[in-house]
Image (cartoon, rainbow, N blue to C red; front, side, top):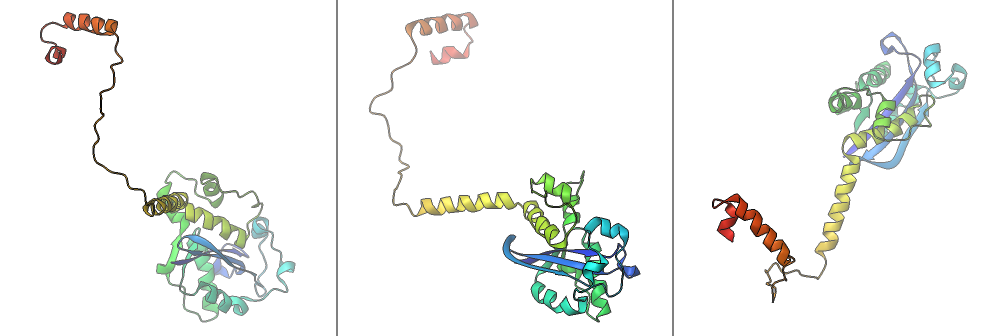
Length: 233
């Protein structure tokens, strides 16, 4: 099962008002494990200026983007990377809104929502008391996010992939794999252990001293004739 964990950085917050994607990062998972394959590109927003508030978040300037390819130039590479995989994003409505707005400008069909997994919605179900930001989830799952002084599409995708794996039992799954390996190793052993009950040739000597026995007998006598101990004396 292939999944593509991805993130975008944008000129602003409103795709419906013409804000554009300026960075796209993605990493590939196969059966919830990273394959090492990734996709990353900066994108010229075709004349749309980066909002100062957005710049404070990601630090990507208009000058930096001036010589970068436009979305039309990278869209096929991105779609080839995604292929038939599901897309995984944190607060997927935001990222997919921008991706589908870019698709619409080029005459592409919107990406199908039944192939989109929102890790924010998943986190809210798992941890209803929150907080469930990416940073908070990294802290919850002991994932090192110390490099994240600003948002970045590829770095955030890599962190989100780790979070997503942990939310789906990543470490527990690893333990199960280890257990399966141990069972497999044991199964190829030629040693056979019999389940037949074996009796000792002679009973073990009692650890009770005579003084212990006398004191117990005196205690039972105090309980009267109805004491349960009298049935086993």
